[in-house]
Amino acid sequence: MKKNIGHWPATKGRGLSSKASTQRTAVANVARIPITNIYMDGDYTGIIKLGNSEKPLNVILDTGSSALALDAKKYTPSTADRTTNLAQTDSYGDGSTWTGAVIRTTVTIGDGESQIPLPNANAAIAYQASSDMFRQADGILGLAYAPLDDAFEMPKDTWKNQYSSTEVRTGKGQQIAPYLTQLATAGVTSDKIAFYTLRSAIHVGTGNDATDPLNNGYMIVGGGEESTDLYTGEFQSVKVLDDAWYSTNLKQVIVGSSSPIAARLQGPQGMPTNSIIDSGTNSLNLGQQLLNAVLAKFPASQRSVLKSAILGQELVPMAELGSLNDWPTISFVLQGDTGDVKLVVTPSNYWQTDAGQVGYALPAITLGEPGLAILGLPLMNGYFTIFDGEADGGKGAVLFASIKK
Image (cartoon, one colour):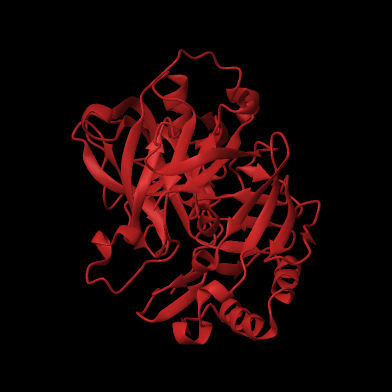
């Protein structure tokens, strides 16, 4: 099984300082969209509708990037769409890439009374893409609240003249607004996106994986707090410290009741902080030093099984794990708005049982870049998670409340 370790282009950021100055009217539009993990090996996708025909397209939902890109094999611009001289090209943390022509079209999200249309939305039609980019999905919807989504001005219409990624990079850099920023700037919705998820790997063995409740969830556009059927208790607020991604400050990791492990204070070169929270990563992606320190806190027998599974990304017979109740929790302590926030990942979330094959488990922990922790779906699976671009004077925050199952 291929493990996604994040769709997050190095060129993308949230740009909240610019966004915060935009004047908006109060809005109340909220859309709840069913989502599923079955098309992208654990990452979640949901339906948006494109163009005047409202063609439904199943897109990857990624808080680690900003662009909206659709597979050209799945959507061809119509006469109602407006082509441009702009092109985009992106590469992601798992090595996947695409290059496409920017068009202006209507993007609709939600159904019925909660349906939210956005005319003149920016969308890239990806005429070149690596084989691992979209897979069974139809595109990707970047959910980072960045007003700056980089594109390049080319000499001619980019849909009629499909430039290579190398040629695109020679164009004049331009700034376009991504989908969520356009929604908020137009006063259509609030700068919020929320997730209700239960798994970071497909749960198998129920006969129909697509209808298995564990493989499905919700994304809420424009709100979150009103969805009291999906969470319980109060929200904890994790501070967003930088405009690049949902950049957070990881302070400690605690395995069970053992002594805390101090996280590296600074992230790697090019990263503004030592951690990010990302819906497009279906693992806890930890640097070697931090991963070794975490593994050292496990009892020897558990450490051996977990380490081997992580390094090999192998399925493990669930019988070898024994009772998950005997495994420790892994807690992440992050800087909050008013104090430290402790978020707990249970054994049932860092071990994805009945994954890949009935009776087997997959570790939802991966080896990542030194000094950087990408906290993905295993962290979110235990919490109803709101990415709030309006919090902290527009700097942003990520809110967590205990999930209802």
